[in-house]
Length: 234
Image 1: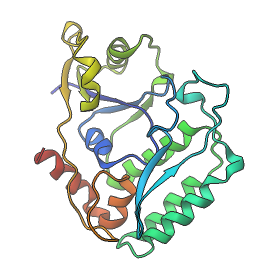
Image 2 (image 1 turned 120 degrees about the vertical axis):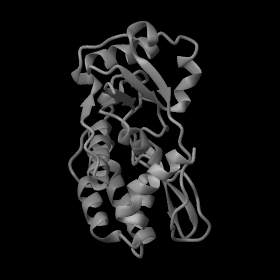
Image 3 (image 1 turned 30 degrees about the horizontal axis):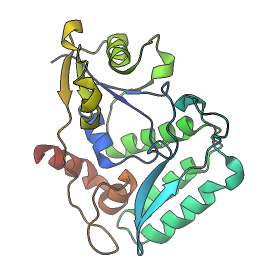
Image 4 (image 1 turned 90 degrees about the vertical axis):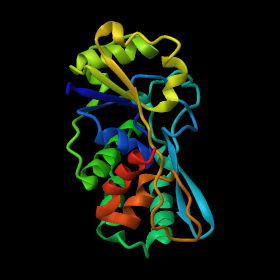
């Protein structure tokens, strides 16, 4: 069967598709060495409130740091974002079927003394992985001896973790197909096929592709099965 790798930026409270990829991988590598993109999913995501979608954004120190890597981005702790995020999520999900114990666990991680954005994101992603019961090992790209950019970097990471299969988010197809050299290096390339499944939600009509937090708090132990149903129906 070989060894499958996924290579993902450590985003804030990722959507269910992130964990669909993780469920199919033998190793997940966090791409923390690339340039930080301000106001991207790296620092924000959406939840659902009685008033509709709410974007939760982690404030970071970016002034004069235009080319900083994800691994180097510092959280602006003076803005006390954890208080605001915890309050908003508790108000929105207090009546969710699986609010307990997940809300307490999530908030405990949120309130840890994280100096850097990547550390916070990876701690939260690890918690989601464990809550879903996934065994996928997690590795930081910054811990590997790799170099290059774009496709070269992806190939180097696969080789560094001993992967001969690479499962890619479909959004990366734009640049991978322009320079697809995976086969030359003995790596089979496959793109994710995933359609976010419908599930029970609070507060009115269903909204797809929210943070994984929305799915977990509403569906609890059924979350992984629902994620897999989105893959089967893609």
